[in-house]
Image 1 (cartoon, rainbow, N blue to C red):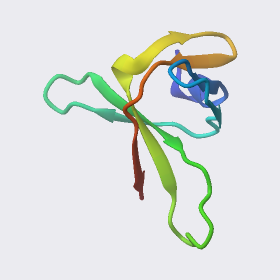
Image 2: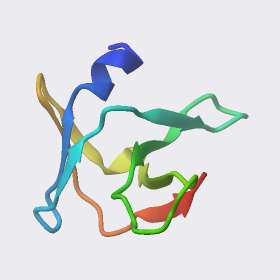
Image 3: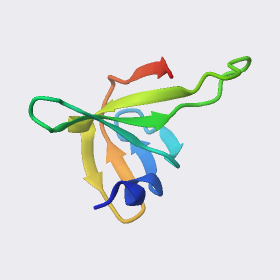
Length: 84
């Protein structure tokens, strides 16, 4: 699967039923030693007065339960919110 194919999928968290929206753009974080994917970065929700700051959600790769034709199903309580 190509990274561009992941970008078009909707992300849903089974832990709390939250619809995290359409990813639109996904970035990957790799472990430099092993080359394995550690996290996916997904654009976060817009926060008022955050001009010029991009919010993102860092989802652990092991939290991904299934990647289907239209959605990515994750199950996690642990999400790291940050800014770029």
